[in-house]
Image (tube, rainbow, N blue to C red; front, side, top):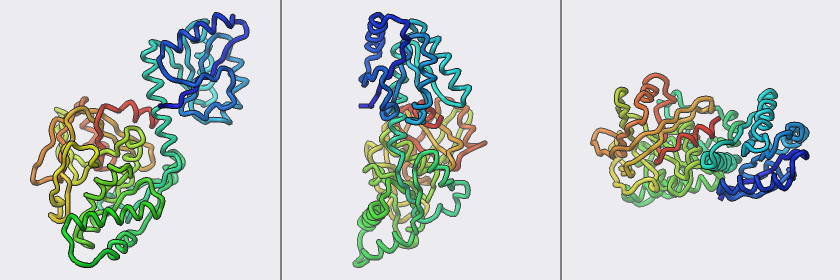
Amino acid sequence: MADIAIYTLTSDLHNEEAVRLTTTEFLDSLGIAFDFKGNDFSDYGQHTLSLIYVRTGGTEGIFKRLLHTLREQSECPFYLLTSGKSNSLAASMEILAYLRQHSMSGEILHGDPAYITRRIHLLARVNEARRRIDGMRLGVIGQPSDWLIASHADYAAVRQKLGVEIVDIPMQELLDLLQQGHGASVSTEEGALRIYAALKTIVTRHQLNGFTLRCFDLLTAVHNTGCLALARLNAEGIIAGCEGDVPAMISMLITHALTGVSGFQANPASINTETGEVLFAHCTIPFNMVERYELDTHFESGIGIGIRGFMKPGPVTIFKVSGDLARHFVCEGQLEQNLSKPDLCRTQQFIRLTNPSAATYFLTNPIGNHHIILPGHCSSLFEEFLK
């Protein structure tokens, strides 16, 4: 359950008994669990979401006097909750205008109680994701694949904006671990499980929350693939991306923090810009995203293991963020069916975009080729997170 705190601003000119009654009625109408702090702001900013309930007019000066202390305690936007009673909306508007004049962000939460409640839950979920990500470590095992000429990242920008550290890990470290287990010949699946175990060792050794792997190097080095390992690790909550694609890995990290799944890293195989139909494909998908799966060979090489996963048809969201977090793409759609064409990567999803015109993005201004697909319509979560 989200940790939500409510602080209050109240003018001395208003009758406290009447204000208390209005407060109870209004907060009860929201139907949310919260920690009511009143006018004690001493722990402001220490909760997942801190709301300032402007109970009356005439509170602008009170807020201004508190502002310096509040900014020292938290850099989050100011969320001003108002019932509209006792000139509270007018005061909130004056406060928000003052914040904007001084290059600070904020928002007034006002209107139908059901809308306010939805907005509070969304903000709490986004803030919880930001807190969860802050301090995480991601690894790049090997360099990005040679063909990913647009899929590098600005490590400093990622640390500054997300609080996430990215570290480079030589591919040889993984190969050395696999060599230690080299001996009698094993089956293809056993070999894929050795890759899984070696990657898990690297995750533990470097204290990683996730990684992206230059996986095609495994085809020549050990005649196998990382597809099975990535499917398992993602299902275990460890972000595991393909081809050393760093922006895709960052996108998967954000996706997991917001929704609980890493998402399906895939690239479009065909696009119809008139209908908004896009066919996405890749050779691995997290096991916790599919209803069932089959083991096949890796598509391009015809060796090792590729995963053909079947995700439940229904609403989906497609997401990608650039390596410096300056750009992002998000759109919603409908997974119409899972395909099994022999001439494509093994997991194939035929998706119809809710807004067909969004398909032109892929042909005019894409953020690389890989995009992240996840179940459900979640665009509002991503848009709020990346504000």
